[in-house]
Length: 81
Image (cartoon, rainbow, N blue to C red):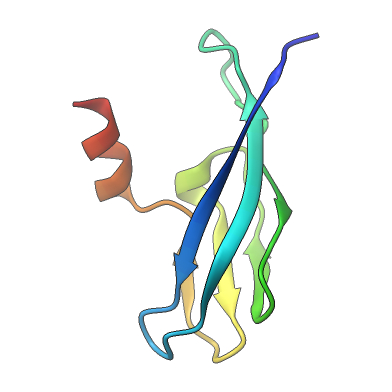
């Protein structure tokens, strides 16, 4: 069984300014097609709009109604450099 990478990410709603830290994890095996991404804990005021196996497709919804990806495509690209 593969180990899971665990990390925290600061979420900040660009519409209302609601913010907090989410706890997430994914499988630590670069050969896997799906990293089995999961948000283990969300801060108050945020919920899951659309779950996904990939951070870029996992959509968070703020209590104000704004929806946004857990990790933007720009964040992912910057990390690959």
